[in-house]
Length: 138
Image 1: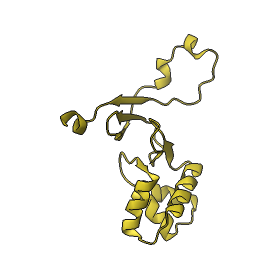
Image 2 (image 1 turned 90 degrees about the horizontal axis):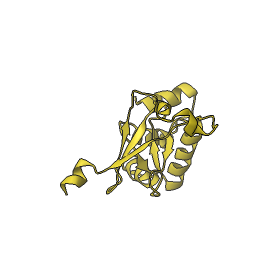
Image 3 (image 1 turned 90 degrees about the vertical axis):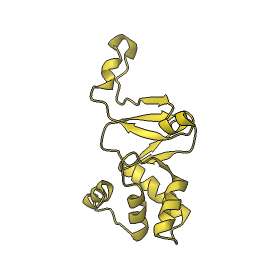
Image 4 (image 1 turned 180 degrees about the horizontal axis):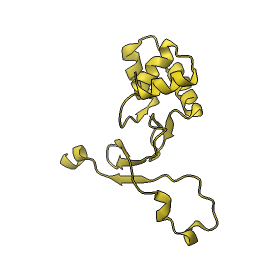
């Protein structure tokens, strides 16, 4: 069973066939699918699943804090099941591929106190941009 499915079961979230297949599609490392991509993959497993059900399920998962909604460059929102592990993103500027990046240091330490302008910083989001190996070869 996937990490996401285990977390949802632990919360007592009712796992209908539709919710289960959406969670299964989101399982894996470096998963950042759009809602349409989730729907396409879910339809392969459960042909009768509707687009509305996928969108509603993704919205519920975001509200539960089990999935992150990622928007890196004005393109379609993507859904990241890696919600319980601090990480940043590495984005290909050409094809939009997103990879999770796990940094060992505290990213807030890179922001000197004078540059915080009195803000109480509650969250840090870092996006690295570059060209992925596939696009670099093209």
